[in-house]
Length: 497
View (tube, helix red, strand yellow):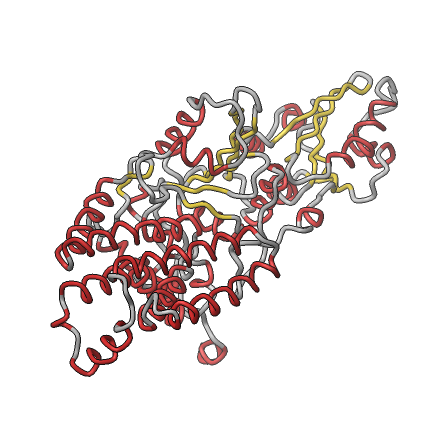
């Protein structure tokens, strides 16, 4: 027994060594009499003001007191009622990750004092999602404090292998930037790549995580986002358990995760909160909406300018009737409406919420009706542009929605010059560009190019949970299995047993 008191248990030593990989894990050494007291904790999970006022200050006031003989004396010295004495490593691990501080004496490693200092309730104030609203599922979003954001993640991913590495970026601002991943799951090569690229940034002030996205991207000459940006905690948690790396900077409520694929930007956490049939249906609706938004107006120009023969006879007469008073060619007609829609969207986004909503609705109705009555556009084109604008909002990620909005214009010009041939040329250039893109060295179009048949099951559709137990192979995770699928035993099954 004496030997055990002089040597810290191997499990506890390994556990503390693992936790020390994270920048938010702290250890304080206090000298009390002839003894050395160690207090370990996660600064993102505890209330540090409570630690200073109720733990450290009372101990410092009695630092020279020689009556401190054993760890149980903390109960009389510290004005905190919830102090638990234990020697079980499993209990210490669970409590430490729930917001407790762990205290131990230098020669009494078999005993630990668990001091309740959690501040999780305070983390949940005023952090609902603003731009990624969820009808089904949690409403927890991130805020501008990096410590609060890391605490929110640790409250959801309650495992010691969640590693947080902090570095300073910005020659003037010295902004704290955290790299977050799960040890034993995430490929270390991706972590080292992100860390190396962040350390090489030479910029004066970092205002937001979106700047880091541009600095560390594989290709800056593309409208497509190569890292997924989100303010939702559940989306970041899903990315971490899948094997991706998350990055956040102090002062920003947005995380970026990578390596990302094109399909990641059409996935919504709500897909996994609904039955898989409904989740798959809504995902396919989003993908179809993006395709329609990208090519609808360019197809209108190509058909009305070069290919009248593909229009059904029953539709040809209404189309000619709607355009008989329009003095402009289809290209100018489309550009006028598309730019008008962009004006309304930008104005509505930068005005106060209630005024912006009113402007969007009233402005769209008034301008649309006025342009048709004035003979500037056809009523059919107004319908197509309205549907196209509406479909672009189906994209869950704002940055991808912006890319789709931008790409409509090159497609419009290509179809106005060469018709359907120009449209196919534009699609060809787009596909070639997408095949050349990478995110942290991983192909952007995977699992389609290069083809990964096994990973296609969670791309176009959302499969049942019994088929999503493995992580995507293209991420090359250290552990490929997320969980063991098993059929839930219902009451009638138990009765048979």
